[in-house]
Length: 418
Image 1 (cartoon, rainbow, N blue to C red):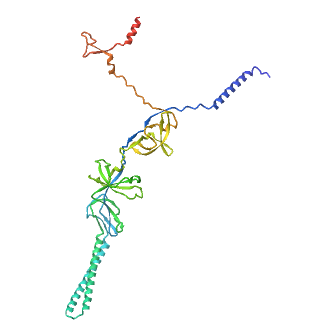
Image 2: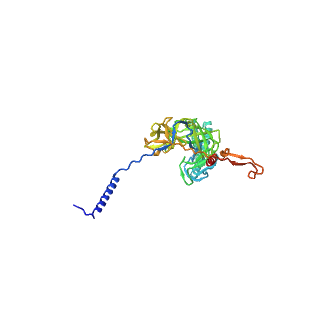
Image 3: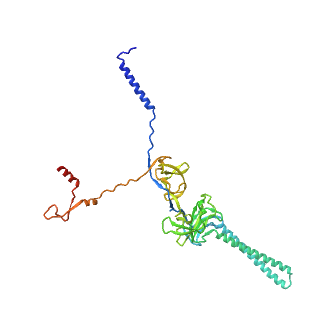
């Protein structure tokens, strides 16, 4: 079948559109070429053994060696408290008082019983004296005199009992006044006026004057290294001269709340800091200064799952591989490696988060800027023109310096002359 000449341009246009559509579909279906991973430049450091510089330091508190918790020896209601927190007290000073009325009444009753017992003893003594005279005249039997003697001894025993009871009641009345038995500083108040306390309930805490201890706590894995009598360096939080101390006591059991062991250090040959002040202690038994260890900057470490790893550089292939390491502790801003590396290895120091295992890298070379040429270096290229009399260009206070003629312009002039 023939086509008309009018439809031919339309067919050619349709075929052209079909070719374009096919090319577009083929281009869309084809996968783009993978981009090559760039070769990164890394900074390397060579693993070596260095000496540790840091020590284990703990914060501590200054406390009195003996701290007493004072309380009333009898029960009652507190009517007055003279001691205040932080107050310095002396031995014999009144700290607090109970209501003494009941104890005074008991003392009065004991005093009355003593008076009655004294009367009965005096009466029995008079009877015994009379019966003694009658016995001397043989008017009574010996048995009757013995009965009077027993009555006298019973009355004397009752008198002694009443006297002791009065003394006890007098002490009870005196116990209603709480008195400091030592000189020191009030470090705590455990009861207030109006409160009813039982006998022995702590009311005031006093830190006794005298030797002071520095108290700090150590974890369970360090307490075995601290022995009684070992040296400890002490320095104040607010500064001042360092002090020397020795371990005086190590707790035998851990604190139930913190699970740490309390250590007490006695300060030697120096004025102890104020009570309650903060100090820092460095036990010599826990010192690691001078010990050889492998140290790495923290920028070389990365987290690999639950472990710590570094990138080790392979000089033969120019690639990096991951190496798991074990960190023991910190030494300043560096980490101490306990296992995983040996001296001589090369590890990546920075940029560890952008690398992958087996990736090719290049060693970073620091660019050194070329030093600029100073003016002093151009001095040999200058000539000194001596001052000539009558030459206005050279008159002055000193010799004039003119630049030397360059060889290049001279050569150019010679060629032009030819």
